[in-house]
Length: 219
Image 1 (cartoon, rainbow, N blue to C red):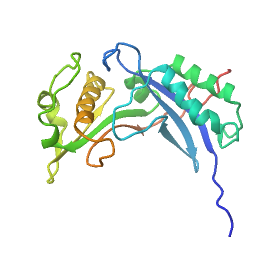
Image 2: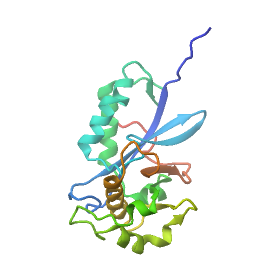
Image 3: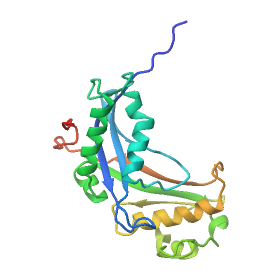
């Protein structure tokens, strides 16, 4: 019986999205780092740190911690390539350093790079309807007020769940998603599958020529 051969990940670009300074409870710049991976001739945006139970905006040091524990390590045995070629961990981290320095806001990520970032929220409504935020910086204070402000985005299921997507390119949406998700996190166990708070990145139309996106920066 032949052993299964795992194909290496081929990273052909990287886009780092920076968020408004008020997106989180502390006013440090936070990011959504996105790797562009090549699969079967197509290109797919991939979050560096995906997850279904929290809106995870990342500080710069968290980006490098995540890279060092995963992709940079995989470059050593060539299970991660850059533009189809092996790369040293040091050079690879340099590419991400350059991407962070050239980070763009969510609207530019869409218009220039064709990468849309959205927050996806889903949960049983009754379980969160009375939730209150523990952060004084929360712009709405309670989940009921969040629902009143963003209810036009809500979809309601027959099973009592709600779901919504917030386009992070729109004013206030990054902040609203973060604080709404934090209230949900306080109401549900991390292992529970009945709720979701996550970031999704989608390719919404890439220009034929994107200066810098698929070029390898000099480390």
